[in-house]
Image 1 (cartoon, protein in one colour):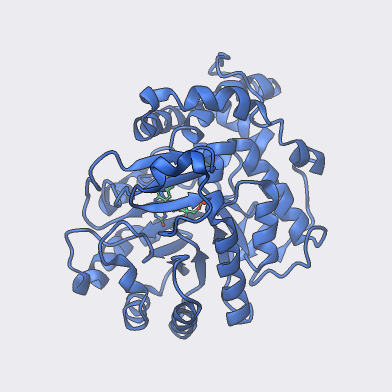
Image 2: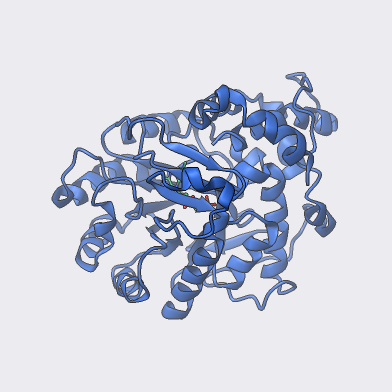
Length: 405
Ligand SMILES: Cc1cc2nc3c(=O)[nH]c(=O)nc-3n(C[C@H](O)[C@H](O)[C@H](O)COP(=O)(O)O)c2cc1C
């Protein structure tokens, strides 16, 4: 157990009186205000150099932040500092919208899982475009996830996605088409053959477009969708979103299991890996895959890569394990990519042996990145040589984010 799990997380889970969403907002605001020198010191400490290339984009390491954590891109510079090799913002919609009624976010702690029914609460595509314009590049590739506004009828979905796409594609290294959230009525029907064909026809163009799919699709439905992806120029697939299934929930969490919404975290690990494997086999490796779902241990990342993923994202694992998981997963994935932990089936990926990051033993212990006292104070002008000290308060801030969903 890392210090994050034993000392930091319990504190973080009490932030906001235990209200996961309040604590999350508080934490994002703190992360957004991290001083530049602190971010530099954190990055030197956490970031693992394990470059990969996929769909024409070069990534410093294959571990990304999954969509939904920073929907409006308010804390963008913090994520590379926490070791992420890419960031997916959103999901955003053409119209700003409040999302579903609260409460809508539930921790299932014993299961290392989350149920959410946020419903694409976001400030809208124009607001994100303005923020990205002001911010400039963040130093790692940026994916932008697009969804359908709730007020837009399903038959007008293409125009809705197109509005967001036109505003945002100049800032994106790739576009994620989210047709798999369970929390917008009817959205998942856009995974049907003709709907996804229409969407891809409209959106494929200036930037790589990836389609994010649900883990609840049957294999024949996935196969049909993949055919359309291949024939309509999709650059890849993101597998998977949250599940409507409730398998794998610990008895202690049964009271929350009845909440409606999408389930993520450890109960999703096996299903996500199977979907990644199916997509890889079905396409013969022709469609690069971002594997996401239930990466809660470092080796879960290597297993997704082994199953055929080019890149890996995490969300729930970050909540429960903190930034140590990002670094350890990158090290684990790198081992997978270089054939030590896997047979190395990675579609559309070029890997590099250039390794300047953590030694594998760091990954094994998972200790260093999150082992910081939450109460430590940081001088805002911390010199790089103060990396450990400077990282401490950031760990606390980061931990608040990770611990508050
Ligand atoms: C609170 C929450 C909000 C999410 N919001 C989005 C979203 O807006 N768009 C999206 O594509 N996925 C969203 N997701 C799904 C994640 O990106 C990811 O696919 C899923 O949680 C599985 O990964 P995990 O097990 O690592 O959490 C959300 C997940 C959670 C827990």
